Amino acid sequence: RAAKQMEAHTLAMANFSKISNYLANDRTVLAWTRTSLALVRTTFAIAALAAASDAWQEALNSTVFALGFLGCAFFFVGCVRFVDVRSALDGNHPPTYMLYRMADTGRHPWNPRRMLPVHCLLFMA
Image (cartoon, rainbow, N blue to C red; front, side):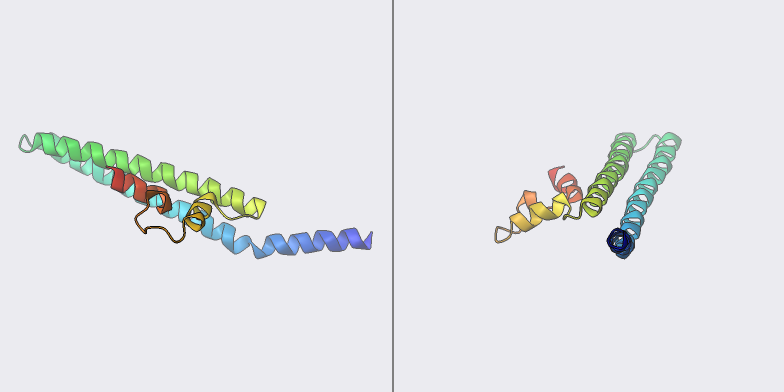
């Protein structure tokens, strides 16, 4: 009985030591969300500008589309990263994007598989 209690306390202490990692992951997903909301806010401002003027209509419309797409992409990448890191913390293994970066050491630094998902979105456009 004492061994089981000690094991339970040890497990609780191990989980408590990871609390800063969980909180950092939560702060990171909030930063991704805040960034995507700022992009969407800017999209609405440019859309209002496009509606108010007839000049540069095509450029403004493409800007609105690009910023809207980037806002959604940032939110999606942030959520995927959050779930990946959360499952890594729960399973006590490194996140998958870190595994890809560690597996590609020693290769050319501009290898697309070494980039984070956001970098891939920015460089593939």
